[in-house]
Image 1 (cartoon, rainbow, N blue to C red):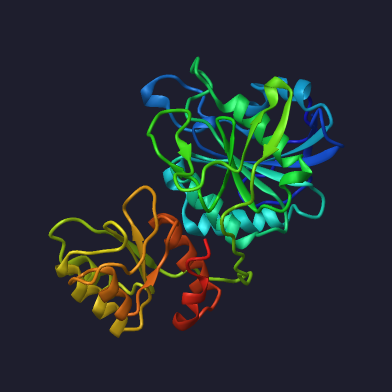
Image 2: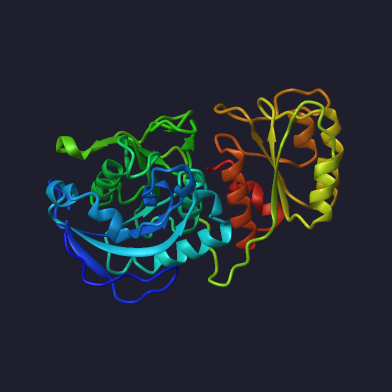
Length: 357
């Protein structure tokens, strides 16, 4: 596997390095590989050195099987960053989305390697902002490349296979991990260490892929719900707070968020969308200030809805003008609200954006 040039670091768009490698069961395709860091870029096996350091070229050199299983794909290598997952901010997600959009004229698809801790948020951000302009496949690994259980190689091969497959080119941003293909709007990380950590608790995988078995990616269904929000090139992302409800909680954190200038608040409520009585005053204060409040659930799966009628229950929150967001966790609801506000949607128009996914 050979490379022509070293690639630019974050955000630079100079000439592209290439290596030959595409799907054994598809026509030739060009896939851009954008490397952002994460565990897949970690090379050490000692606790004190477990930080992402590998370049895209160094990662691909650890997976020579790409050329064997995907002989007709041309891979463009882009070193965007070497960030740990928790270091990825919404502002960096915006820069990443602009970087990816700049690649669409000369590539058939893009894969993004990413830290798993914030992968679902970055993938959903790009799902909203990039839309169908170019297929984007996120992948990574749960184990380092020096670990005998390293899953990064297989995940990379599978991600390239999906990106090169025309059947997945109208589905927005996807996450490919552990042989499964997930919609960015539906997937979440469910275990801190297991390779099968990524799941879609409500809807299941969109499909499966096992490139090492010479098996073409299989598509089962379309994403449950998708939406594209256009962001102007000079968009500023507002401060949106996310608060997780707990037993006995009061309005202190809500008041603090409002004093700090929150443009929106996402509430990770109990059950189908209920909060302790002490929280209601904080939500009511936000609504009086015309600050949008989006209700999600701290439960792993299931809808949120205004069902119960006691103090702090969903029906009271509905009367206060809260927006219910079923099948979207609080992290993604925050991303969606942030992007929508940055796009200039008025508080009244926000309701139309939820719960579309």
